[in-house]
Length: 455
Image 1: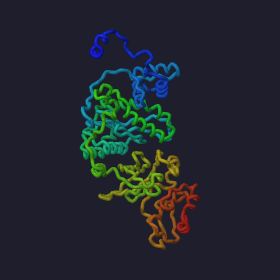
Image 2: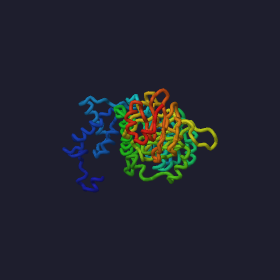
Image 3: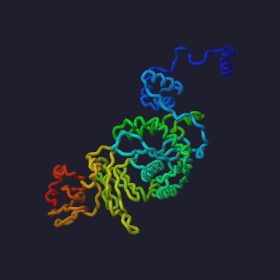
Image 4: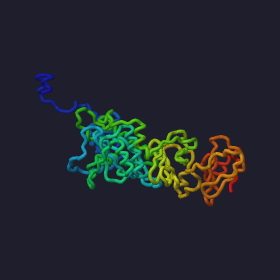
């Protein structure tokens, strides 16, 4: 009828369907693009179709499937193993509008870097658009790691009406519940033994197909982070199966989410909601953050930048831009209203994607956390009198002052001698390894070199 309306009687004649002879959308460029994608054996025809559309090559999923089959015969690529078709179940938390439901969960990431230990992906999904609002790779699945991801998601997109999780203790901690209440977020859990009620389980299956191949080939922590960040960008930007029949033409999670946000908060109100857990400090010239009379090492390469400190009941994490730099076991001071830290011990310095000007992490991971110092109590202040006789070390050993005036505020002296080792931390809290002692002493200014003798 359409041809009759447009062409009259001539449009009623039978014609062959399809494109005219000699017109074909599949060319060598498209075949080669599919071949490069096919190095990841877990990608199927729809994911190949979505990835090609992202770079401007528009082929149907069926056409991509035929090219995948052709390349398997030519190059011997593996065929992806599908989960098989299952009966579609009614979702109890189906969303009718954006930011009605957010879903959070944790997934173990398989990699080949044994020195890193377990690595987890903590993600937050917006149910209506299927967009990833916040996601991070962490080395632990604890409340602090989850709250860090939640803070960045709320800071950018506002808060949802309901946050949906499983019954994991990470999401049901008292501090997390206090933050939900402060942000007016209703907390819901899926039924036990029914993970299909969570939309993010499907998203993790997509991550498994799109990113696990590249996670397994990463050779360092920065490469793992780059793969994860690339997956988040590709996932949000590519077509999603759930949106293939939308009438408004929006196909990707980012397009469906659009500009709409949840309840937005001023930065002061958001910080007040996280006041007992999250703190910000500026790193000094040596990469230390001062917190409750303790100097905590973050990263010297980030000196001058603002770092985030996450305080939990038994540990404290120094973080920058969502990536943990170091972690310490802490013991709060007893007494009402003290708010201090009695003990800071067992420092752990994480490998990061930022350049490090020195490498103490190997010594810490080798079980030698006491050689040198990355956490210091601010009790050894700068010397105010030329005749200051002595500064007591926090640990075993002592450091004697022969005299000399240190009038510069920046020339604070923090010292510690490790038990049974002839090593010291001198000159503004510098982390010193025993083998680097001579090199460090050469870096001391003459006014300090004449003041010290080690016992």
